[in-house]
Image (tube, rainbow, N blue to C red; front, side, top):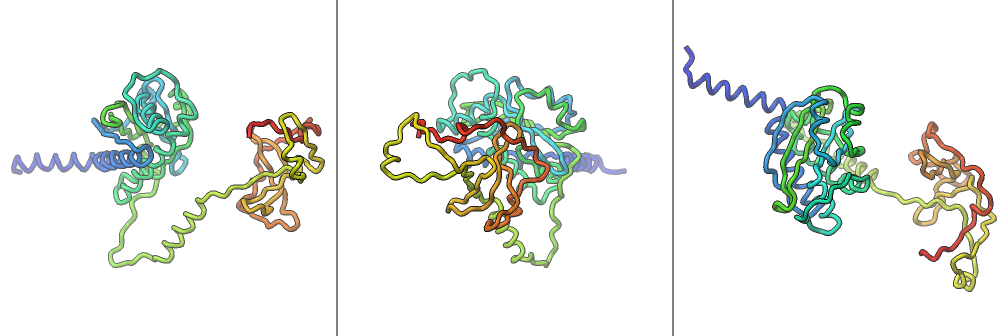
Length: 330
């Protein structure tokens, strides 16, 4: 007969293994650290986790979890997987206050619906926390379901989640947090597909040295490709004597005879011509469709507009639409 003490020990070990497989201590611990570091680095304040639960929930249950007027950030992940992170009103208010006035207030909250501006302001914190979670889980099995997610869009109402998310089990990390030592107390909820679609932890080979040259080139390429390049769309250029420039005033009209909506120049910060295009619109916003490389213009494939991008030419524009009117607003 087995000793009673060994049976109890065996059950505890089995339960612990099952908890890790379901996204227990690994995801729990790493999410705490990742969110704390993101808040510290991005908001210059502190977040303390007062309680944390990790479990599996259905899509219907997740739709009932967000508090009223919470910000719901939709996350894009591996293999077209979608998840959500929900910031309750106190947490959202604390994040916004830390960025706008430099501190988290403890005054009473004003009830309001989250806006697109709110989402843009917290997106950086969310992505920083998700990157930290992914890095912390690099050697753990939870990386398969918790890695590779980033901010995609936001909702101010949980009802569209039923159409956006897959009707399948989700792993949910639900945390009660305190910002700035109790100035704001609320909930952060992270829900990701339980069926992990991402890459698992990397297998380490004993005695095999990494190709440092290849690693360096990959890191350099990532940094260069992630850098920003500013381009200016130039409709026309006008040369005037300094005396006329000094006499410009609000309401004056300057003719631009060489301007054309089908001749837009894209120039770099040094004034060098990079490409040419024509003015149009895309999804209600003004846009420039690039023309084929003109003579004397270096062709840049990375900048080419996809051929299936929906564009509509501006119609009904007359010469008055191509006039420059000083407004006095700077």
